[in-house]
Image (cartoon, rainbow, N blue to C red; front, side, top):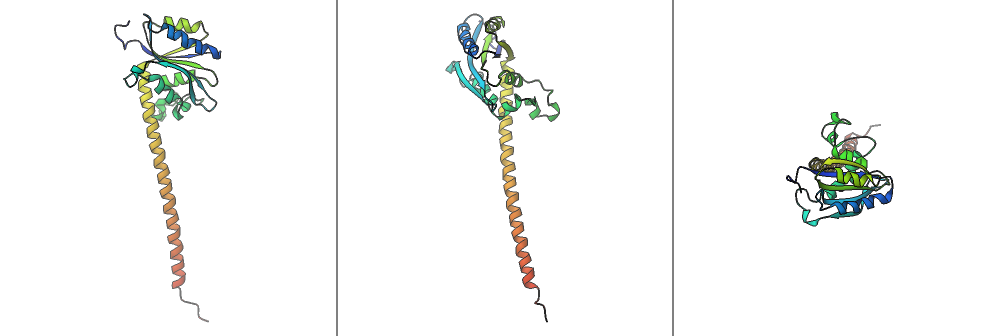
Length: 213
């Protein structure tokens, strides 16, 4: 289908105004899969709740891709978008993945994850798909017929940002655990210091000679 299988690998995010259209779009994607124009490695209809978390409503995928370099990308993507970092990335603050590494880049860093996250709106199903395309025409036409707005980002860029996001989340957890540990140790030290000070005060009072009349 494609001379270079890595040349046209994309993650496609499609947002809809009608709930049912996202599910119909997944069916259209199934029909396109395996044609000369499109190969679908994984796809899912997802929805973001009021709490910011992303839930998978329906999905398709080839299990043989699981564990490979590009296999399971949609699952990994949903995991990041549905986690704490995804809520930050997709939130009104506009904080992007790059900002986690460089605070000076806030609101200026281009991010595939941020763009995709913003496509998954609260209360309205969206379609996410990991595809190899000969050209964008087939998917764009199918989604346009269903009133879908297509966002397309390089699968390689998404993979790199997902890896960076997972590392950032691991580092954030490590930092949080360290801060909790330090706070606990500080509290214990303060409690011990207070007890020692109290004991010293008692000893000092005991050492003072009794007043003579």
